[in-house]
View 1 (cartoon, rainbow, N blue to C red):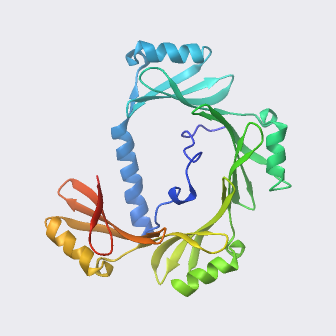
View 2: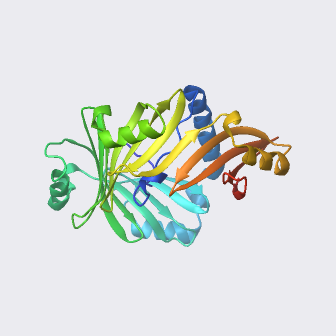
View 3: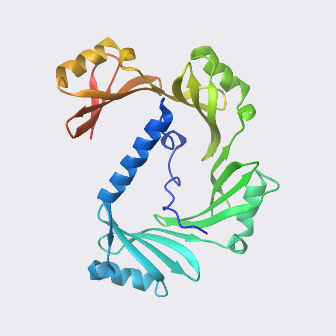
Length: 297
């Protein structure tokens, strides 16, 4: 099985899993990929095992004495290790003291416990597992299972005692509940769907839908009763409210607006404005009255 980054979906809520889909998509996707590569180069550095502190190296070798093909990276003060163990891909993260923070290992299908398979069968009767991993983080062990049906992904996070922690399923357009489509249409207009997903997280069900309305990108998250949990929308500069624009002109008069997004969440509306001045880029979060709530680099 191919090695991938440690699974960060384990404890995230559905609202954190997606960023707004932008208009002019191919251009912005290209820019995003470049930024990710640059960020990864700056933050994560390949290092030779000779340069790993003894306390970290000893802790790793004690924990995984038979590891082979070991590659080390330093990222934000933590050590990320890719290695082979018993002919299977593994990944681990250790802090500067050698404490194991995360561990992920590929599994053979035969290694998946029966109670985990029974939990999957409670949702999907027939399936052919594509990938299986064992994740350990903060002392908790979780089985991450992935497979496809009709080219749609199914992902499960299941505890070692068979409890369903999270379940994500890609949906066909016609599988999005009608009450959610009606809520979108009545409040925002007819949505041309790009992606749709069903989430079950800690027993709570929600639906994620993104696409275009009148050539503008929108992202929606609703609960099963069609109550809006979160809405994100790409804005033109001309659509930024006057109070927000006045604050930007006063407090950031030498900055250029690079991007603007509207977010509705928990009954509150905020504006995320990306600004640029020379090499300096910041995100300013404001309320509709133009009050600055947060500034992020």
